[in-house]
Length: 268
Image 1: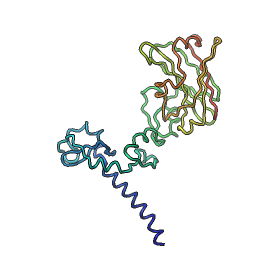
Image 2: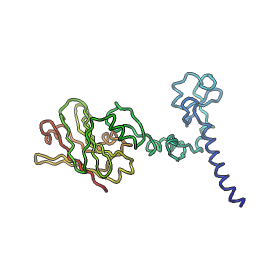
Image 3: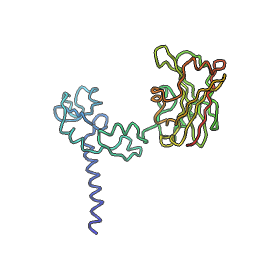
């Protein structure tokens, strides 16, 4: 009986010990964790490397801040399991400091940002709030129902960088279709078309999409797995992991400056 009582007590003690150790690394300015390289003032107070360039004196003792490394604390930090920065949103992961940043970049509990292209909207929230945000803040976006629709981009000859966005609803999910025209190389404008799911990466793996330009006895097709809005589309565009065509190709399929893209969503 006594052995059964000791096991949970030991587990709680271990968890508490890890939490207590991690709390020693709390930055007094941003309250995030002070991770290697760890800098200290002359009295030994710590401050994280992100906050350090913004400070003229120690936030704890107001003493001078030099560039003194605390090698002992760095050594301790290499053994501590730190909670994910999104633990308050539900992530239960604890990680070594060397694994923390990579995990947080792809953590499913990381807030979702507005999936509309461009940087004008700074909204962030949970996945179940995304569609509400889009319907209230981005009312101009057209939504079409069905797994096979035509995405019509008007006035594709407009100068400069331009975005066209449309929503497609099917299979009980919402997909965002994005066409971007930008100058990726000097003097060379290109079009990038891609589909992203208003959902997680895991959910996106259940679908496939096909984009097709069709007309004038020509056909150009791209098939892929939708991106999750957690990933966004910019990395795919940067790596040309989407339907890519230049302005001369666009003119082959355009009709009076308008370009129709056939979009088909299917379940895997």
